[in-house]
Length: 386
Ligand code: GAF
Image (cartoon, rainbow, N blue to C red; front, side, top):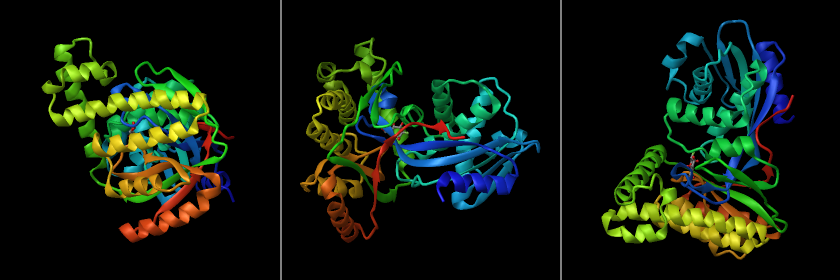
């Protein structure tokens, strides 16, 4: 049985009504890491791993959630929501969405919700954005709020920033909602304009290698990187008042004031400027059908994330290096916030099986951990199924 049937049946057997069903995908990012909150460019896409939501209004005066994958049930009355923060980690993403819709001035009547799917947790594929955006679209549908896609993206991001407490940028929620089959999205995080670029991989396959590592310092270090970038901006803007974010900094400005920046801040700023350039380079390469150039930029991005932005870890570095030395791989890098999660790889289709077997074995001997391998395809963003 597929996930849609499983979740719909669970919903009906639990709540005894007919739900609206929404699918909400995970995301990859081809390139453009840690650039979103610096108001730069990103190049993400939605992929065929998703959470299915079944949602319907109820008349019992409680928000009721059933998390199928972990077999957990939670019910909360509207007055209790803000005190429930932190009590159920997974429910925070959903309650945060309800609160953000309320903050926009809408009354959110009580509802029932069952959800579950196949997005690996803690793998850096943004199951959190899938939770937020999937519920936001489902509530928009059943209660007729008529919020447009960008409003759903923004309120979902705010739910994560304010209720969950992770100061993420806008990339994940945007990719989840605006994803388009076989396209990557170049999003300008400064003005939120975007353009789709066809991802014609023909002889290549997108392969994600999941380290199985999720360091507890991931979110604190993420927030630290954000702060370091802000500090860099604050120092540079003293000399160049037009600078409001790292988006306004180029190499000549960085060179000119390099002695004013502590070395760590200088490295962070340098990475962000380079990574923004790499996004533009990859877009040009995609337009020219130059997939080898795309791969080359991915390797460069990993190098920067490892040595300049310092958000990688030994497991990710091992995978990126192993891939770089395999002739079936034309591009590899860590993806997402870092400190664990997945690498993203461009692999020759004919070599996928052999490479997967080889790297699984090597990873196990190096880390004693099992490597999970996902071949993924680019799909449309969150949508109402029925
Ligand atoms: C995480 C965040 F949620 C994104 O906003 C982005 O900053 C990413 O890390 C790094 O590029 O996925």
